[in-house]
Structures are given as structure tokens and as C-alpha cells.
Image (cartoon, rainbow, N blue to C red; front, side, top):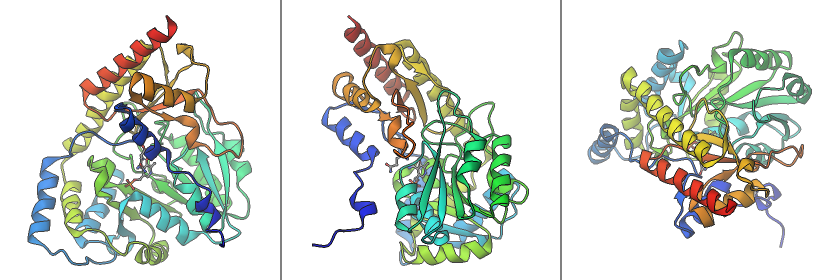
Length: 392
Ligand code: PMP
Ligand code: GLN
């Protein structure tokens, strides 16, 4: 039999599914895969229920419901001062994952190079490689995770078509600074390249930090594709509603990939998210504030259990060094051990790195804190008890 496409045939199941399955098997608290453990805002769910009952429920327009595209255009203006023509520059997708796929495949062709900043979300690389392009990875290193601008420039070449930029950044909770973004913008102009900006955590940014879309920097309006996710902004990860903002010329091509991937997305959910994006500023500030409090609960609990906890300035995640607990194995071994023995699941940091550079840290675990306070306290307690029992 002829082999299937090696890009996909050689892949394992994503680490999120693996750790969630292990958590279920062992009855562990699942702080692995990133999803909130509440049901999301009741008014948005009611809006969806009503829209589904009232209809229409047949294929909505390929680019997305006008109401949602208009709301995305308006959110660009309201939060970032971006002037967007929603009719030509906004498209709705089935989750940010689809938006990433559509954007990357619309831009790349065989022979191109694409730059990734690791650690990164696991969907980027296979999509780039399936398009016949080559990944050039630049890695960030703990504890500061600062952008190595020289190494980044070394990854650029005349063949560089795009960089994927994720800010706020999963898994490390980094929010790129204006200075870092300016350095990236300079390289994009110098090498005539694009940025696919994964900004799904745009509203999950904590005190003292600001989310700056690369698209707002001088010269970047025409080079950036900006991707958002209702899953994160409204704590409705299962809905899989994403949205893309891109200059009209790029959007035309991205829409061509979308038309053959999903073509469109459930209209009732789109209409509820259009309503959600219109919520007042208190909603967005409240979301970030509530998550920040959860970050603090889990960070404190992990520190008390003996971890060295790294800062998390945004996202759902905090990373922690487990070596102070006296655990000398790898991060994969650690995450397996705590899931099976302490009954708390986390995700190993090395899963977010490729093996290209061989410099993936193996002493960090990523913990998800968008859970009820009592769950975070209980998870911390279980980890502290486990660490104590091991030390005894
Ligand atoms: N990008 C990043 C960095 C993510 O963490 C996620 C989370 N799942 C996604 C994209 C995908 O978002 P969606 O669920 O909307 O497809
Ligand atoms: N983005 C989520 C995380 O990092 C998971 C998404 C998924 O399961 N594909 O945990």
C-alpha cells in the first residue's frame, strides 16, 4: 500500500488529547488541556438558543454572518483603533484553528519558509509542512522568554514568506512588548514577509500588560493577518468560532481556502457571538480580572507545594519548574507521574518545541488555571501532599 502523507502519518495524537485521556483514566483534576470549567456567559448561550430556534439554520454566507463580521470590525476599532472594512477584511471560521489553517495555506507554497517562535501551539508546523514549506524555528528560553532578535533575524531569508506570531503566547503566558513587536515588524519589512498573528488570548491579559496587535504598528496593516477566537473571549471553547481580519487582497485568497475547508460555520452560534462582541467594557475587563485572580490562586498554591513558578502575564496558563520538588526525570515523566499519583494533570513544556534545535526545556510543566477556585486549591493541595510524600 502507498504511504499516506508523512506530515500527518508521522504525527502522534495532540498532547492535549493525550493528557485529557490520561486525566480521565486516573480520575485526575485536569489542568492540562486549556478550557474553562464553567459553561460560559448565560446571555450569550440564550442568544444562541433563540437564534437556533428562530432560524435561519441553513447555510449562512460563506464569509460569515454580516452581523458578526460587522461586530469583529467594530471590535478592531474599539479595542485597537484599527479601521477595518468588515465587508472586505473580516471572515468567520470554525475556530481559530481553521483560521490558522486557511491563512497559512493561502500564503505558502512549496519552497517557501515560515518562521515559528517556540514553544508554540501544535497546529502550526504540520499545516506549514503540508503546504510544502519549511519551518525555521526560533526558540525562547526560560525563565525570561525574551525574544532573541539576532537569532530571529538569522532565521529570515529571501525565501521567508511568513512568521506565525502568537501573543499573548500559549504555553508560556508571555505578552510581547512593543519593542519586540517593533523588531519583528522591521524584519518583516526588510524581508518582505507576512505575519499570521494568533491573538486568541487577546482579552486574557493581566495587570501591567497590554495586548498590542502587530497589525497596529507602522507599516504592518498590509502584512498582518489577525486571528481571534470566541472560544477564549467568551469561555465557549467548544463552539469553535474564530475570526480573521486581513487586508482585502490577502483576505480574498484566505477566503478561497476557507470555502473548501468548512465553507461556513453554524449561524446560530455566529449570531450569539455577534451579540457577545457588543458587550460593554466591563465584560472584557471582568474576564481578565477573574482569570488573573485564578492565576494568583494557582501560582501561590504551586509555590507553596514547592514549585518555582514562572510569571504568566496572559492566557489560561502558568508554567512551573518542578526540579525544586526533587523530581529528576523529564517533563513528560513528571506530568505522567502527577496525573497517575497526585491525580492532577498538566502538560509537559517540551511538547511545544520541535526537535530541530534540541534545546527544549524538560523541567517545566504547564498548568491551566481557568478552573473554579476550589479546584485550583484542591489541585495545589494534592501536589503539595504528593511532593511531601515523595520527600519522606
Ligand atoms: N491558538 C492558540 C495559541 C491556542 O491556544 C488555541 C486554543 N485552543 C487555538 C489557537 C485554537 O483556538 P480555537 O479553539 O478557536 O480553534
Ligand atoms: N489550546 C488548548 C491548549 O493549549 C487546547 C486546544 C486543543 O485541545 N486542541 O490547551
